[in-house]
Length: 188
Image 1 (cartoon, rainbow, N blue to C red):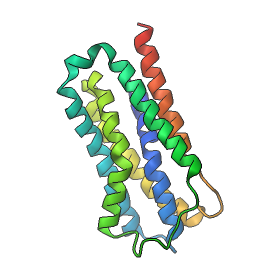
Image 2 (cartoon, helix red, strand yellow; image 1 turned 30 degrees about the vertical axis):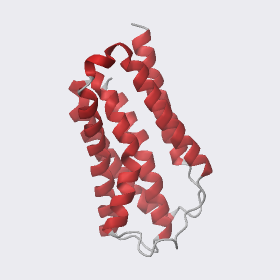
Image 3 (tube, rainbow, N blue to C red; image 1 turned 135 degrees about the horizontal axis):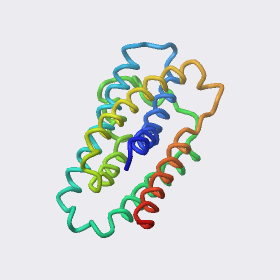
């Protein structure tokens, strides 16, 4: 896996954070730097932590999966990407009144954890590329932070006008990366 693939993968993973941030921005009446920063920081932290945990768990059984790791990476990214596409297509406009304060720490931590579950499985992909894990974690965390922060701003200013289906785009990106990993190994 090269640097560009990691950047594209991190953008794909950040689409969940971006979509949630846009929806929270739509619910906010005005932009609050502190709230946007808090949400982006939590999303970036969890998105960076989960691939590390997935990598560490997957590393314990590296030798057992060496012969089919490319198929495993493809299957995981296909499942994650497919799930993102399905969720993105069926997601309706955000329901702003369901939570009294959607920016409470507990609410944000729950959302950050929920959006990062996919990143946990993605960490297993890096078992075949151990030299890239720290670079990937850093890029995934920064990308998720940036997309979350920008998503909040976009949601406040443009979200009601445009019905963005960013999860679908993220899902397509992840499936494309999975396909690339599979083809790289099959064509060796």
